[in-house]
Length: 160
Image (cartoon, rainbow, N blue to C red; front, side, top):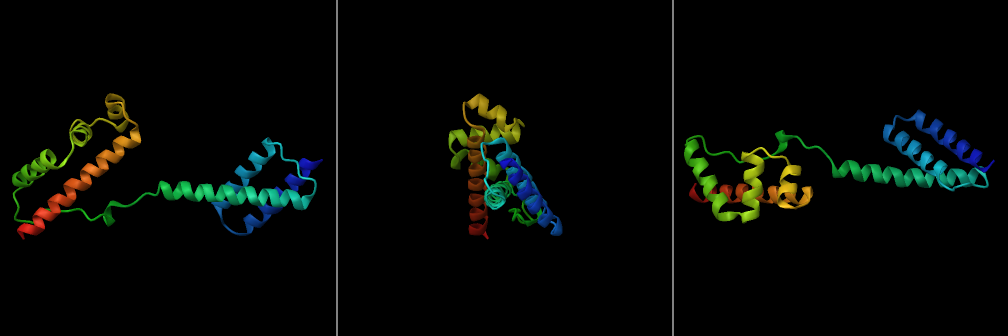
């Protein structure tokens, strides 16, 4: 009979969520209910069931929010891409960037940058070849690109 209190609490919260359009809230409610139902939770009263479910929903919403903020998509339109001045020769720019790669990056960063950007290898392939975690490959590539970008920008500003 105690699982019935959990069902009553679920139905009550579901009705409240239907009045406002919160898809993430509904997802959190469904996830929390399933987790509690599968667990050893057996509230003794309807109030206890509602409190238990509210707490579980709250925790699940926080988890969903953190996951969403961790994997937030950004538009390239907002990214400040360093462009060479209009009168700059493309070959000269390429040679400058290649020189920066040779002089400013660690051997590991050069290897990863070459494999990914020139040889079109995936992060997973690079990680397996170099015996690294995929996240470490991404981090090294990101750092390498930042070094090249910042150094190129600084050199360009110094000559201007």
